Length: 473
Image (spheres, rainbow, N blue to C red):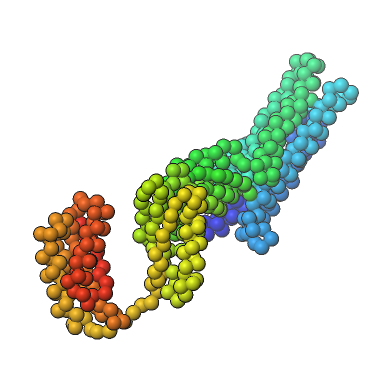
């Protein structure tokens, strides 16, 4: 995109400069015709083109300004210059139309002006019509390609010139016909042609003015907010879309989206979701997107998820969360990990705070028991080499592989590793079990196997078993 920006700016400036040159040529041609014919229709066209020249110059300047990068004073860029340029052009069009209406009524009801139609006037106006058509087409293509509101306004002006020039040609032709066939009432055709031109200008100006005013006042493009909200509501991980705001500056859109996600989502999950939201909005409309995420409890949230959310909000790590119902009362048990350097007093204080918060989930109608253990941060160094523990590892592997007759769920055990760390013997191994077993049953079996190893090899301090499915190589 950075490589395309200079090319885009250069092509937009070229289109705007071509518009300035064309407008200057049209003003010269129509001013010449005003002197030759005295036609109000031609005069209105000359004034229209004169203001078009001013508007084209404003467009040229605004396009150059709008493509400048964002800075400290303009953090959203300079795109509003294009909207302001289009708004200025709307005002100039309105002034032109009002003058033409005033002059037309003067000629219709209060004074007579002699019109001198000629073939030269018709030919010159046809040349002007051709220039209008060519320039309007070039500007429209550039405006559509780069979503430039200033170029679009300029293209709109030249499109109205096409219609108004056609009306003026018809008006002069009718006046000429009136002189040729002695139909004096056709002299009013020129003033009526001027009114028609004024009507076209006012109609087009009102359309352009409404759009540019909406952009200047940060009005949201019609239907875009709803489209974005519907798209975000369908995304996995988004519980609700709370607010979408859209504003436009020049050819750029800025979107602010506030969505709610499950409060147990991790920071990484929220960040990944935010990236996905930005990408999805970018597929709807190229834009600069800001995503704000609100944590919420999803409908029907499980008690365990609520407890984990409480612990997460307090910055505490928990595991081994269990619940049981006895005598109509709920019992919650869990393990809390705390910094290993904390005193018992401080660790107990944190556990008590967590217990209180958990009880609040059910208005105190539960009992909570928390096992406190150190949060592992220390990386220990083995006391003895791996070779010294190899014989014990082989004995443990043989022992475990002799247990499938006792434990039907067990297939085999392998990768047994034994190490002595800080005067404790630690054992880890992999045990293959039947793939279709539920994880709760697997957990019970691994716990029983760990107990059996510690009973048979009493020098062992801790055993960790990693279960694997039998159908996975």
